[in-house]
Length: 192
Image (tube, rainbow, N blue to C red; front, side):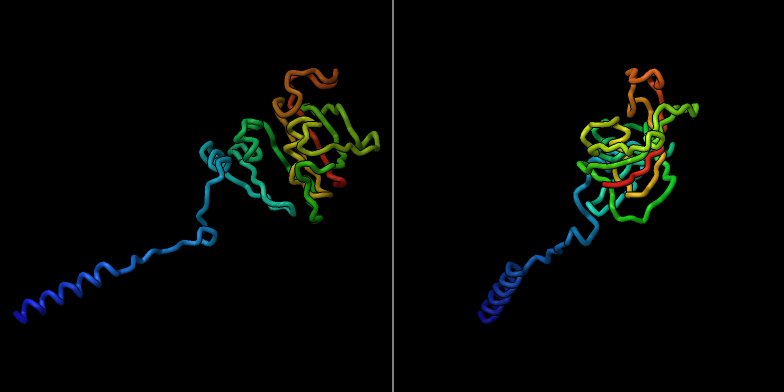
């Protein structure tokens, strides 16, 4: 009988320990583990064969989708279909150390020279001696300017080569610019 009582006590102790065990749950801090929710524009860029180039400004972060032909689109513009591979090439002609970056809704002041692919100049604020001002991202200029000036530093000079889809497309806006022209703009950001 003592054996049975001892056996019952051992079984009860075993059940007690078995059912009172706490599960060891590993809590992962996603912020520090590098895991987070995927940005759909980033994912789309990568799926389409692009690479992501992050731009950090005083107002936050944005990323270009860079394609194998070296053309660029802002990831969200590419995701929405507002820009595509081969439509915008950006070359930085003069860098700037000034920590003021052009962002959406900024009133920007620029000097520019616009040319066709053959080098024919069709417009120049430099020759007029009067800077051109516009509100960035408000649709006041061609899409290639809204996308290509975004993220520029004050004092920086960029060369934008824009496919017709980001310029004037099949509209004839001037006798100097044939329809469906690829346009080249040398743009200097003067002020915000």
